[in-house]
Length: 181
Image (cartoon, rainbow, N blue to C red; front, side, top):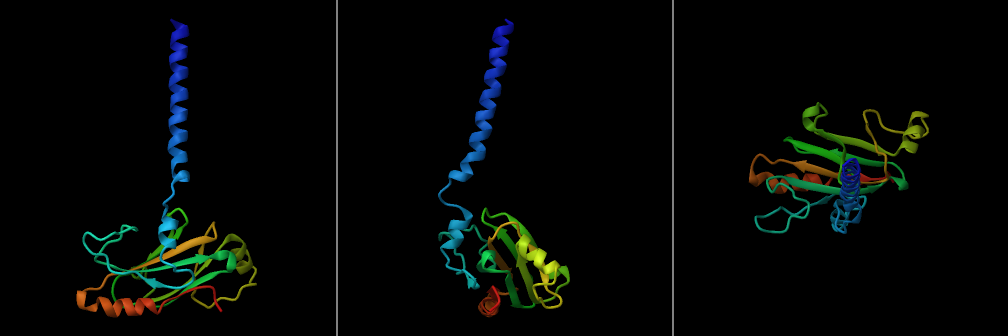
């Protein structure tokens, strides 16, 4: 009886370990990831305004069709990346994502920073150089530290009226993104 009970407990433990290992390994085996979907937009070091999402059309990033989006991929191994520009006077948000599609930083115009976006994204080594004042930055720069080098930035704009959407997207396209020249 005890021997059977031990075998049963052992089988349950082994089954649990195999189950958990399988669940944790599946994302590593996925062929289509957030990074691969973002890479199709060819937005390396430049802001790309995404086409408006329409009902029934493919929406690979699962974006809200009521908002306008700007996307930029950055590689911090080339040096710090900067996001600069002025966004329209309406609700907007900026989020920095890692390769896995996990938000590492997010802010909105409701955080008291106004309509101007002035953000620097640094990896840990660059942050140390920044602390040692070996990297020059402008006053008021919002500093974001990222653990990895491959990131993407998504800017969301909410136009109060559909007629304003084109103007908002034109302003969004003027945002600079990437390393400083």
